[in-house]
Length: 422
Image 1 (cartoon, rainbow, N blue to C red):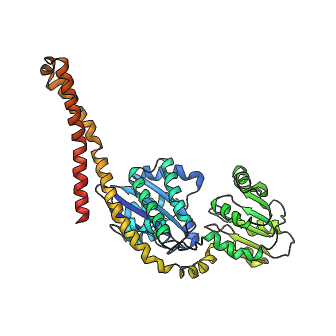
Image 2: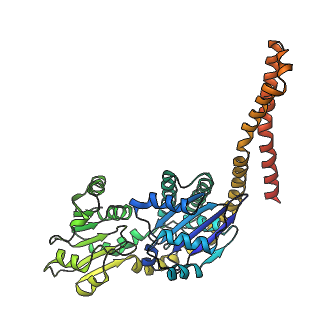
């Protein structure tokens, strides 16, 4: 296991990324750092408060969990131990120490390059998948709604998304996009020559994407089990499915008539245990197909050992993904050049924004100085002025006020541009 720590030094803050990815972690291990939807708002705010972090974004996909941090503090081992403990209180001291001991550290531009690469799919399990750009955008929007991120990460994510779009437009990295969902569908497609009875567990984005593929051309019968009936009904309605919806807690309460199971939930434990499967399969001896898109897995490994079925998991799909990489690797150098160019643009934009933040107090300060001059310093002189002279003076002061606000910003930006050019 490995946590990648990327730090990018700015004018007054550090940008850090703590990433748990498919490169160094098993999929089950990545799942240990997943934060459940229902507790995400509270937990992220708790982490932010406990560690006194300025800004925080949580990004979770099927093959990574990442925490993007903006703060003035340098990330050290003490910070990391506390951070990991706050993510999962069940981690033992020795396990936490093991995580920290195996940190990989990236300095300076590495954080920017890392997230630009992630959003552009260069760091994905399947090179060229477009889904990640939506996931990055949603991660920011969610954390903005939670109130845990602000202007620094806004600018960072804005340039990250712009870079990804530029890469998808100007390179062939996604000419034949293949996501985990589409890979699983390709595996499943050979079994879908006729209408099937399909048991669905979960109602999230991956399930939605998968059912869009499955429902094309054939009228299947669906039974959707989900934690909430509302989301299950919404899924059925949006895709116009012939579906019966049930609570996930009722799964295994009776035998089911099914040919195929598609499962993807955010649960931290196995959802389809061997006991539950035995109850829903009953005495049915026909071959079944199970597609498990969850991380960690929803389906117990013991089921495939004792029943006639084909189990398709994210881990299995990694083999197919490696083959697809060969068709896209030739585009990597083109993408890296785009990232390099966009990193320069981001550096200039963020420094300008840092100046704007720093100088945001200038207008108020100038107004306070002006008011003090009117109310205290030149009170006697102003009393002797006629209305016409007072009007001219007010216009003069307003003009000077605007110039004193704009001139420092213009000069500072010119200096930054010159430094960047050098």
